[in-house]
Image (tube, rainbow, N blue to C red):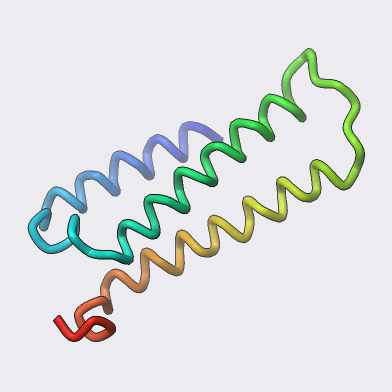
Length: 93
């Protein structure tokens, strides 16, 4: 799980630096970065609560809630990433 996340962050940084003057000031990118930060926190909490050897027994809804939140957040991150390509059209720049 974390290996894929790290590779995605590295490739995203490389793409952002390639056109830093236009991409780093993009408000959609800022939204995407905030969503990734929130998803990272939830992903870490989920890992600690569900997959650690010292994990306590959870209510079934708690694990489902975290999983649903992660799915929604990563879908929003993907959507924001696709919208970055169209930001000139959206913002008229």
